[in-house]
Length: 257
Ligand SMILES: [Zn+2]
Image (cartoon, rainbow, N blue to C red; front, side, top):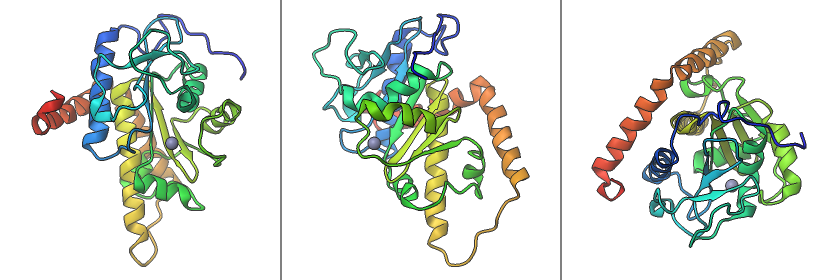
């Protein structure tokens, strides 16, 4: 996989959306991640593909907290993380290696989010996998790739291996590190990140309770994952969920309104 995926204006998962609409929705996503306590100081990114044929992406400026991201200060970068449009803010090209390679080679993906929350990072340390024996984890059955830790993911040389580890999945567990999730649009990516976060929280809590966990049959886990996909395919489902969470956040944190 050494060449960029070709993308036409029609095949772009963001076709039909305006840049301004995506800027506003992405700023809301950054604020939601902060509101939910999932930030890591000024680190990590959420990136969004812009409509059209060009490999152009919206991403947070280097040095701003997620709280400080606005529709206006989001940067436009290429797959290498370098600015495509001038800005008073600086990009973080090294930090974009993971996002850039997913966007470059997965034309079905419109949004990538990466977090290091404590439950997720704890799970990634264990010599095991995301447990699919709970409500949220079962929905992820067959959707998770795993990537061995090579250090901070800033080197171009690791890009191809991260891509191979993700394959055709939508969740990439970065062992001893965190997680990246990717989906067609912003609401779907938020919903997937929520599912992974909840699965990790429940897995950590269950691990602290003595005694064995009830193991679900593979067929039940498979059915859960397929049902979750069907819900996802109802495009309004994730949007309703995302918009409700944004409204709740803005009621409680009017500075984000
Ligand atoms: Zn990271």
